[in-house]
Length: 243
Length: 291
Image (cartoon, rainbow over all chains, first blue to last red; front, side, top):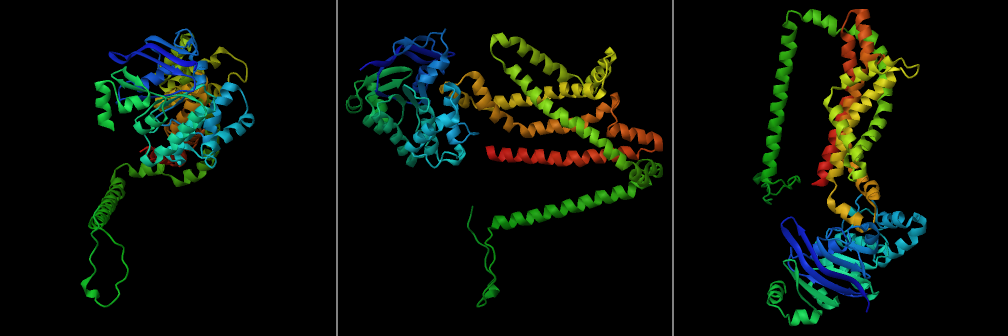
């Protein structure tokens, strides 16, 4: 499998607080990598660095072998290739669902609503939002909003998707529908990195699980290995607390 | 909340008592307190009003004040003239307000310009806001309204309407720009993150994501600015236009009576009170929606 995304000794601090220290990670094409760990362990920051929402302080991130952390390059075209979904959905509240989905393709690909509408509607229907297209975000349930946010990111035809605790803000009965959407993407071969507290899902769906603690990857292994026989004491302790 | 229900009257045995709303003890008490405060407010208002009506006419100069300020004959005679002069105020307001709304937004965007190449614009906006919020509107009107036509420009470039409007626009757009800026700052950073993650440019993020939300959010606050503007249009009377205040002054001189000023005040209130209530209502609704 070709390497899609590679992190080399990524370091990121906010003031005196080091959030990511020397993180290295390889994500292959079509792979699903889950990041687990307590709140504040650096999962979100790591994802935001991959999308250049946060500039890294040191180290490199390679997308298809090209260094995207070079300070000289324009982050905008890089972000167009990487989709991201957030814990709090972050839909644009003044636009309907379909307008949320169409905005970025319209502006970036310079195509009209008419040219893009069919594709957007197909995508929305596939994620069960066929009857919610002209609704505003505040008229939707949390699960529907999050699926709309996933579709909004997919409409840019990203090469890789980043999920930042996308089920953490949801009522428990709505978690399933959003995870189903992620499963659907996996079945299509989408490359994904997902920070999550859903251990069952990580175990079932991930190709690789990374346990982060205090800004470092403590353990990186196949899900079966990490959940049944964690090699490190810190991993064992974390899993004891959450499982 | 408790579910204790008012007890049925013991006298009602056998007879079906009329259905009564189930009130909790707290609801009953709150209703009693509400009635009591209403009664107290009504009584104290009536007492103050009675005192004013009885005491003010006892002042030694009351008869003179009444004929000079509250002269209904003069009011009836001048009010139509005042009303037609007020259309001038409305006109000036009508063309100033949209210009202020747009120019204020431009200043707000200059002020938020981040890139170093645009630093001069940022500097300009900061100086602009400092100057025009720091100088009384009437001074700006004097300086521009008398100063610029003093250059000896040909018609129509010496019109007091034109330069009065310019003065109002300069002053008010500074205030409006600050309101826009608070609106822009109030949009949560996560909206910017989401827009960035989609690969939108800074300009597109501002235009499609931030501004539509920010402008909507500050509509009530800006309404208060425009209500002030409506009143301050009257200041242009000092540089020439025969609008309602000027007309009231003319009538005052003709009839040697101050009642036209009262008429002008009534006309302003007829506009500003409903507008203020509407703004308050919008603000209250927004606060409810956000909580």
